[in-house]
Length: 228
Image (cartoon, rainbow, N blue to C red; front, top):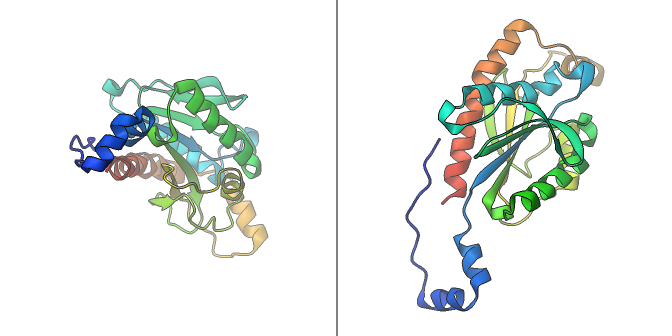
């Protein structure tokens, strides 16, 4: 993972005096990324192992790939956003698998994010919120960083999230998409049947391999960007 930059641009004399006179302004000007809250989208129960829940699979693979010295624990059941959630809360990364149905993820995520800031005593500038989700428009295992407000491409989970957490100025929010491919026929029924179908063994291996390493690289890029 990319290292934080230690250098800091020297402020003007006017800015220095203003910051010295107002501790709050000074504290905000010094805020830098301290933690990641990484949340995967998916469906619970019988649809957990489907293509639409590929984000969960990739998040688990990412957790297993993290260096041991980062102290990232295995997933266990914990409470976030007033619900029981599969979570892995380490010193740098808090990994959550959304516990709700895909189409109603937004309200839960908005509450979990706000509660997390309060519980950790952190400001929005100190927490990078990253949403990990499946993407029909990309080849299997292809991982891409996307702006928070980028097109949802018909993804109902993203629609729900954007409705509950609309883009905010200066917010350190981003999405990471994971390609699941797409059936040749593009009618609604065929696509729906595909995303809710079980992930075959060979496809699962590709998602675990490319997805886990791709998410690591994506978070590194975001850390570098957000710490500039």
